[in-house]
Length: 492
Figure 1 (cartoon, rainbow, N blue to C red):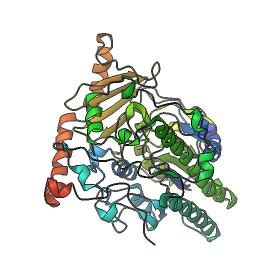
Figure 2: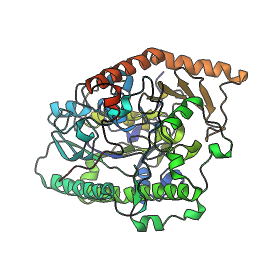
Figure 3: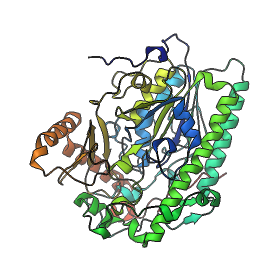
Figure 4: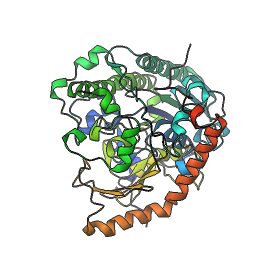
């Protein structure tokens, strides 16, 4: 049965006149790292204002808690297991059509500024022009991360915290330049006569590591008021065996070493979220001042979250809320203002949304929905949330299924986890072994099995990764291929 509209006055009829799309993507930003989400330290006045004039989705998920697969899924509107961009050595290359290709075919201007993290700048990925794009290092990315069949027994340094504290990183400079460039792009576009409809993708890096941020942002954070991360193994918490294997492969928390450095790392992460809000503010100000706001829908999100020391884990690559839940805001003509929507949504919903904005039909095989429709309907507690992981540090595939209050984690070869997100939003109590919750566990497992074969998908991902490793000369050679840390900014 179709869901009722919450306010049909907000939904613009398909008159044939398209809206422009401005897509703003941060990197590694937790859904809670917003002022409007109630964060005690992160101040985001520009994103708060965007949410106030649009709809904020509180249950938005990444399709995969790692950069490259998530971005390929965003581009194509398809799940990672459908498109087989499994890890950070398999950048999007255009072999599966993107929303950009559809817009280009309709004669729309489609450009990008900043981080894309695709295979390279020449692959036909749906942009007529890319400005200063950040792509996979040397076009190959983290080949060493594809070695996971089996996962290497020797631990690997994370290098997440080689740089930490106040300063000005190359990523900070890159983000500031991207914001300035996007503002100028909007000014130039507004000055064009008879400009074709357009879509602009602006990719930022913050709050992605290295956790380095200009001093004034760090000064605004009261480090002494930051609590120690929850569920730390040093306090007696026992990690799930799959997560423990990941930590054994690369233990960033041990590299931090002290509670003081953990709090500094969190303060820098929070400060970077404030920093990137200011950069986004430059772009939104230009949109408003040029008059383009009236004809443009803005989509703001992030590729994935960050564990932030919870369970002694940092970076992404787990199924827990901190790594998989992302901010997602939609604002512009036809979008209910000030709405907070709890329906499960995903980055794969961005492709049909951009096509909807452009008044173009979406491929009916796309699994997502236009966020314009979702924003204009009542909350749907039955819609399924999904994420999957097949990348660095994982001994096997991991799948997250969300429905209603339940979060189900399926690990191939390991026991599952089940959490009641209403009673236990911090996911401290695993209910999977409680017989009273067996019907729920079985229901959630059935939802996953309707989507895919968990074991066969794991085997397919590993076969593709093994083939990639063979192309680089085998396991030992592959372990030395690719950047040790984050992808470098483009040289100018």
